[in-house]
Length: 431
Image (cartoon, rainbow, N blue to C red):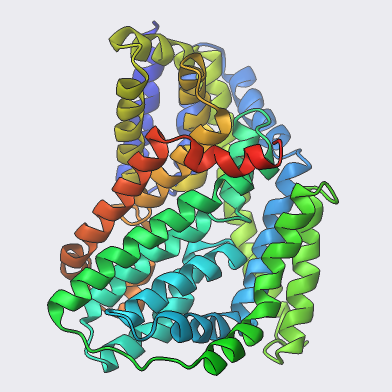
């Protein structure tokens, strides 16, 4: 193994992050410095630029800006209020009712909007003050909101699953979407158990029990929003349209729904388009830079060396998966999800493939790992959004966050060592 490129890559990347360089530029610059070890300057600059440009030339990636736009339309289109009302009618009278409402709403909102940030922002701003009014500690409400927001990244439609499909070399997007349901719901249920126990221990008061009529009314109000999931996922699984075509349908449906709810008007559209364009630009720059780093890693044979090294430690699947999980949990604390998927999928997928692991199963393991990273400092983006909206500090949120964090880790290890939790639904549809 040639150690110099690895040393240059690690030192340059960590140094750039340490001095506050944006993640995308840290990835691109460290990739360039690494390849300069092996080839002259002119071809090195040309190659990195070329890899960044050609990496984005993918029909599948077109789904990402469209799903981002769809999520922005959903976020501004009054969806959150209706989902919260529906969740409240179901679990409002249980111990920790408002916390459970937050988790269920976040699961639905995250899945519909496809964004943990959007979910954390919407649920935190709406339910945060309500939970405080009912006597819930501000820090507990923030911790619930932060962890629950990440479940929508596993429950489809999910942009990050599309990114993983690209990084894995063609894992079925339809299979990945179906594979995310049970792990996402399982994570949400474990969070609900922990939140309920915590609320009961703290003596938070119970809400009023809803009548069947109230449940039915809130369900009917939420149906148009929930129907998006049926249309998008149903169409992809049935082979009616691709994930990219589904994203365009999601935009059209979200726009119609926003006008139907009278939450979106023509004068609001420029701001929505501008916000989604800004988010898309950031996401695409991250993807382009990460693709260039993936190529550099491959050129320097680093994935093959790591694969050999890991299999040299042990060929026991349980041990290797434990090591990979621990490494990904560590990666998630300092790297954003999209570059982590693009950089580490080519490194770890060959290892688990040699052990007979299904690429779809590994994709769900990886995404669950990195979802946990979104809740942890120093780079946890959802953590900072949740804390900011709650107007509290990370130090105060850590205590109630730890048991919820443990629940997410338990879900991760259940999904890791029980593959059918991920693969059962895709197998039903022969995917």
